[in-house]
Length: 106
Length: 106
Length: 106
Length: 106
Image (cartoon, rainbow over all chains, first blue to last red; front, side, top):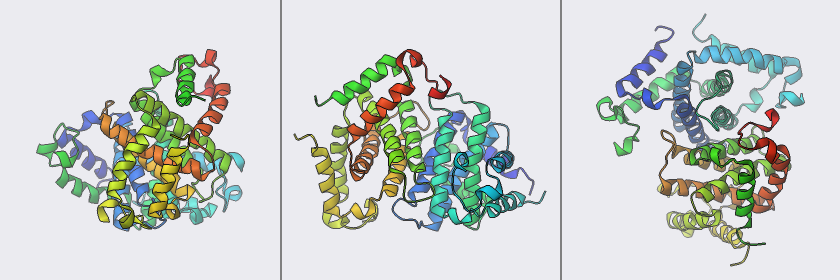
């Protein structure tokens, strides 16, 4: 499999349906928030969710997140790696270890 | 680069900080929803957001989504591909072309 | 205090700042989702949140929700009462008692 | 009608179903975020939503917000008024007029 084949698969899926016209950045951002809440709904009344449903909703979040990354001309992996470098500076391992404290209170 | 190196990078980042104790599925789901709303905030009063900020917030959504996928014992790509197969059946290209109508009204 | 004084207080606050131009229905809906996630952030890593912070974030959700109700030409109380009548039919007390099951599975 | 009758109506509705056991603060916060996203879904692909649907989803947001206010021992109106006093200081009318700029950049 080629490294960017998932990107190409998604592009093809969207192109076949002529859906790119709906996929402005703001609409994709709304869609990510909507799907993220459907994922949260798996845990609305209990900390244990149903695995199959969690996977489906997480897939929806990821799909829109991939589409937005592509629209921005980048890849999910590049975005994660870049942000991780920032987070590493804000949360040095020896300071943040075992604590969920926000960086500005560390 | 190895295919799963981003997963290993994230695992190492979490392990170094002993943060896995905070990353229950429900907490990751909450985190994805929280970051998705921060992404949406880039577009709160305008359809045009600031590129650098959008990329940062999208990176946060993706990071927690990757962590949850890993916790579920799967990968983002596998989840997207599996869901895409379902979506393809719900939205046949010739029926859905150029329409944002929900599948149950198509 | 007059029954609708909170509505008038909010209208005056917005008018003094000439903010009505930003308060389209879609922008208010985005704002409610953004503030709801900030409320959720009080509980990101723990089921116990800090009372003062919860109250502030809940106030933000409510403020935007009141503004949207006013934009729709109705009141929060009217909306709640109307929906409650629907919910009462979907969740009859004797069927729903002590269960968090969604109505379509009751 | 008595001033707090909506609070009493909601309390009675919940008590009849024995649902208070599900209404921890964190669960109500999740529920508000979930309903806020359903409200946002009315505007997913367009800035114009369907009025009846918007009203229903806004009602759900408000219902959970009222329940959480009651759980915190306060009222929606008290919360809004208190926060408005803070916001007035952060956004003086003459400085904020006609601008959607965040207070820390004003």
